[in-house]
Image (cartoon, rainbow, N blue to C red; front, top):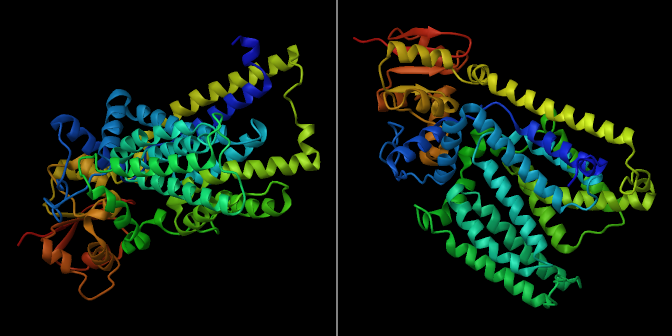
Length: 493
């Protein structure tokens, strides 16, 4: 491909779209769980062993632990060891951008209509982005959807799904999303047949029933490879145990429904409303399989913020198809058809300038984000308080904020073990309810965890109700305080 060909408007648009997605996704490492992911990946690399019991807490030490993200943690630590924070920022920025570029490939109306709708979907899912294993699930789900849709023309593509599932189940328990999508496609195909829609137009002339059987066999094969992980058949039930956790719904923000009063979720609201409107206005009618997928994923997105990224993977191509058909019917699409426009010298020069500007912007943006990592860390986590603890060694056991547990594991383990961290599934609903009762002084028995576990140091935000209560007690003293964290220690008799 020559330079002139590369600078065609359509190709420049796609390159700028890719750079834009990557730039959006390249952000500071602030996810509360990334720290214990880093530590676990480091220990796996050092010991060549996967954890089966908890090593980090004193409240669940030695209890069974299903570390379903073990391979992702090795990847996270490997990127960190190779490139530091910049390696993580670039690596996961590329994962997220790749996930949405694969969605873009599934869209009709490429590049312009598809590009705009893909960006809308990216903005909708952006609140969930970060250096976290869920982003790997996002990419693998995007690839799986591409395989499933292309398999209508090339059924043999379905044989790629078992190795994909084998990799997925060792990277993240989100593999269950993949199995669910495959089942929804199978049920959707049955609905298509029931309502008189053709489900296969394979190039080799296979009948629709052959495609249906191939998908059913692929589902069975994918389910069969799930136990091929360090935790065996436990991975069958693990995703469902997580979904059933009421405490995670109550205390963890991303498991709650999106609050559309917040601008953060405005793109998601726009997508939902646009889908409803275009289903009426557009001449493009969704087939039963598409209605099923869209309905299930819209429900999931409205139930939990965590599901919005998967919702966008389903919705972007459907929204793009309906929007394109509506624009074509109204005649608007012809005005923006640059497919056959001539590439003049002035256009070539303008495209080159735009492309160069976006490349420079992307490089500068990544450098700024990487250089600002220390500041982002100090803003989101009690870096100064941890430095104080490392220097002055207040007595253990220590109680810290839920969101800070992973940070303490990275910074202070093994000298200090944590009371709780982001592995909510390990601690269970009752434990998290008790912690909430203590933190917010919900009952007269708020001191019970202190007595049960012999807690001698507390590291919590200064506005925590339990901090106010402890400061009023004569046997607790303030060792350190700033605007972010307070370190309280129990006086030695």
